Length: 51
Image (cartoon, rainbow, N blue to C red):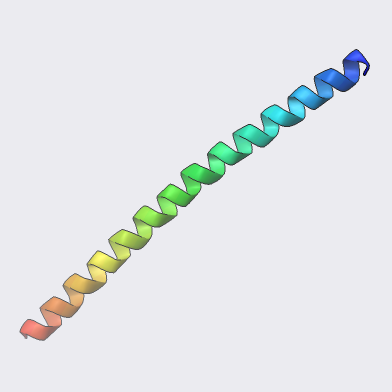
């Protein structure tokens, strides 16, 4: 392998790893938002049932 090919391969690996980290963070945020929305819906139903 040439030096250029090695450097290119290393950069592609770094790009892939950083993409994975961003995806994991995004999934965590989406999950947290889903939990919050579910809790809010539960509160709304509880309030409506008490009226």
